[in-house]
Image (tube, one colour):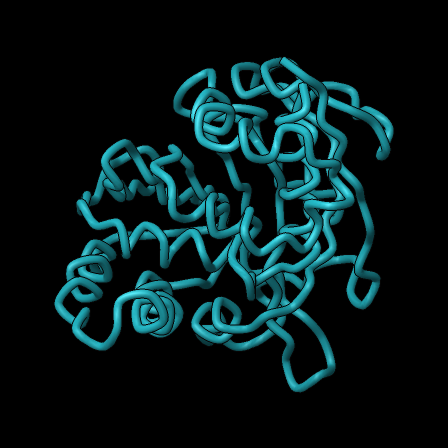
Length: 273
């Protein structure tokens, strides 16, 4: 496989996340998911099979997408992302970070996310059209984003919870707002039942302490499969639902614009190799 280059920058407003015991409990997820804010990402590489972290590599370097011995770690809170998940071909394209600002005085880390895509699907669906286009030309290319969302490319969004007081109800409410907005964008106003089917997967008895992992996966046939800490909580066959969820992270108006730029650059690098 070809090598991809991740670029790194830092958001220095609050380099150390506050202790979850430093303020009274509240539900920031719904606000954080709905906001568009470039969250700085910096990472080095960790193996998904070895629980012991490897020695970090330099912040500017290239990694081979098929090499599971190399990983990436959020620098400021230690959240680590394996270079591939679920299958060997579902590899990391980029990572982002979500924060909630409290009255403009401080920020709380909510979750980090990684965007994964199937190498073979990327080449099968996108290489012919974009393989000869330079990374600089693809930056900001709306057609590439649309093709990534529209085609039956296996992808997974991996959410890693950072905020220790986050409730499943907050997650459910956040998705009602953010995914609901995207469903209206792509499918009109007749998707309330579809939205309810999706949000009902996040049942009240599910616990998501800090360190919990949520996978939102688009599988073949535009099937959305959702799991929490390795346990499947539901699946729905719906192209518009898959597209709406992926749009939150790689669409025209993503949660983390810097992460979106990195994803496009890494996608371009992969297509050209």
